[in-house]
Image (tube, rainbow, N blue to C red; front, side):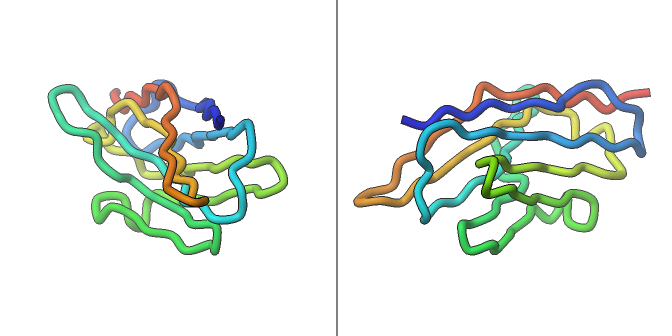
Length: 118
């Protein structure tokens, strides 16, 4: 069983920055994909950024050039550096882990609120 714990959300002014962290406890193995999804009120949860065990990354078009996903394998932690934040980035951000073994197992964190407002 894997547990994901997010931290780093908060209130920030437009143009500001935040760094989200997602610490995974338990074994995530050597083949996985971890990422961040956002869900704004009244909207579906949507992919923000993802990083694979091989180091490949993918971003939503709306965050390209502003957000950076990275990982620390030794700490089983994934980060999301968010720069040049906009009010439309306001959402609950969820950490996700897809672990590939004999089958794919999906895990979610509880989420952390990011509010961009002046």
